[in-house]
Amino acid sequence: MTEKNDTPLVETLNLTRVYGDGEEIRALDGVSMVINKGELVTVMGPSGSGKSTLLNMIGALDRPTSGSVWVNGEDLAKVRNLDSFRAQTVGFVFQLHNLIPTLTARENVEVPMMGQVSMGERHRRSKELLALVGLPDRMRHLPNQLSGGQRQRVAVARALANNPPLVLADEPTGSLDTEAGRALMGLLQEINRSQGTTFIAVTHDPAVARQTNRVLVMEDGKITREDFIGSPIEEDLKMWRHSGLGRRIVEGDFDGVLSELDLSDPWVDSVRTFLQVTDRMET
Ligand code: ADP
Ligand code: MG
Image (tube, rainbow, N blue to C red; front, side, top):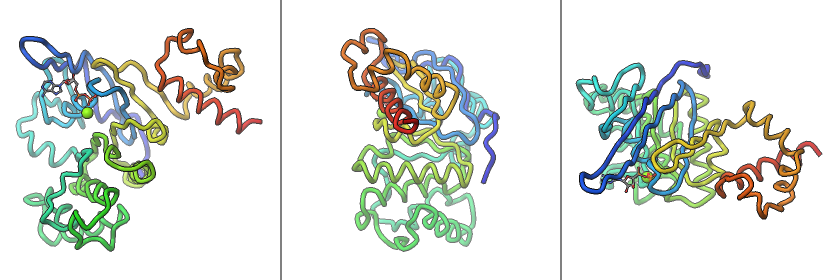
C-alpha cells in the first residue's frame, strides 16, 4: 500500500488550447489545477467541454497553445524525447480499447514493454498484470474472444505495463454496460490503492464519478466545479441538508430549486443522491 501524499504529480497553469484559424474554438480556456501523487480523479462535463483535450495535453499527445503542464516534475514544453517520456510516465486507456486484434491478451500487454525491458521480464510482467486485472486465465485469448469489459481490463493492464506513475483514462467505461463500467472503475480504485498509481479518468456516469475521491467538472474549456468526496465540503453538505432548501431536495421537491441555486442538473442530481444517502444513514 502506497501512502497518499501532497506531492504534485500533474500541474497545469493557464492551460489553453485553441483549434482552427478562422473560427476559433477554445477547447481549453485557462485551466489551472494540481493533481497529487496517489489521487484518483474523475473528470465530468458535457460533450465538447474539453475533457479529451485536457487529457491529451497532460499525456503530451498534443501541445498547448499557451500555458504549461508539468508531469512528474517535468515541464512538458522542455521534454526532449516525448516518446520516451510517454512510455515511462503515462499509461493511456481509451473508450475503445485499441487492442491489436491479431495479438493475444498477453502480447497486447507486452507491446509497450518492447524495447524497454528484456523478453523474460516482459513475460513475467504481462502474466502478473493480467492476474492483477482479474484475467489470469485469458492470457492466450484474442481480443474478439473477450467481452467488452475484459478487453478494457486488458487495456488497463497494457496501460500499466511500464509501471507509470500516471494513467489517463478517457471514458474507459463509455462502451460498457452499467455493471461492467462500475466493475472497471472498481478495478481502477483497487489498483490506485494497491499500486499507488495516480488516475485521471473521464466519465459520464455520476455513479462512477462518486466512486472516486475528487471530481473535476468541465464546461466550455474550463474547470467550473470541483467536488471532494469524503471531505470538509461533504460535512458542509450534511449541515446543509437540514436547511429548508436541503430538505426540499432530499424530499424530491426541487421545482424551482434549480433556478434558486443556479446549478446544472447533474450537480443537483448528485447533491440529492448524496443528501438522501446521508439522511438514510442518520435516521
Ligand atoms: P470532450 O472530450 O469534453 O467531449 P474535446 O476535448 O474532445 O471535448 O473537444 C473540445 C472542443 O474542441 C470541441 O468543441 C471540439 O469540437 C474541439 N476539438 C477537439 N479536437 C479538435 C481538433 N483536432 N480540431 C478542431 N477542433 C477540435
Ligand atoms: Mg472526449
